[in-house]
Image 1 (tube, helix red, strand yellow):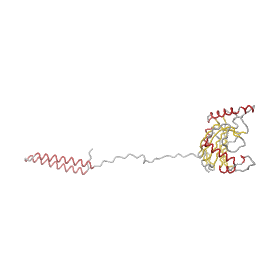
Image 2 (image 1 turned 180 degrees about the vertical axis):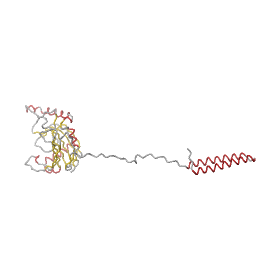
Image 3 (image 1 turned 45 degrees about the horizontal axis):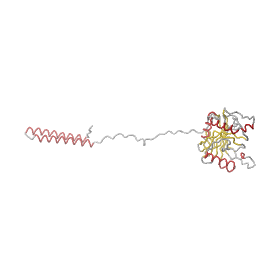
Image 4 (image 1 turned 30 degrees about the vertical axis):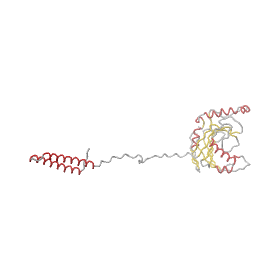
Length: 310
């Protein structure tokens, strides 16, 4: 639609007035014998002037600015920050959470270190460290007490060459990622006066500020059937800065295992050991995590939730 400004309207009135006057003159000339062609020519010129004036005025009227579309890049993006839930346990810079099916409660404690020297068993020497004890633990009373230990690496290395070797072994294990088996020598603290009989269901995963290895195992001073009394879950890990070593000793059971291993003929058991333990390790690997008590999945989630900032 043609838009005309106020000044254009005035110009239109002036031009129309001239046009009417020209027409009037043309009529007068006609009545008085004037040249009608000249009058007609003047009328056409006036009409052309009117059209030109109107077009010029239409060009001068600015169009209304179009409504600008919102620039998505300039729109303020509002994000809702989801606050992370606090850990179930927080003690001296160490935090973690656990499923209610694992235990009823966890009791933290600071353990005073001791250096007994070479005249005592290596396990009798250890630095100040933090220990978490579990009450109302799902697996009930077993040979091992359910505990998690946090050791300062530097202090332990300085006190015990045995512990220093295990810490170095864990560093290498986290690089090479061996699969375990039997015989087994996966890294393990605390130091015990017993041998690692086997390692099964080996897996590697991180906790919040470190990494480690999880496996099921038994320790003993002789070969023994895998049973619910002695089997336990362990996680051995190091913080990313290498300052702390985390180790878990958590008894675990399965309905497919005997409660207490029995040996009728030890010589026959020993002769058949390699076949027996190989089949048992495969069987353990094939059992789903939730079929154990406590669930391997819940124990993994608990260990993965650890954050050690001291």
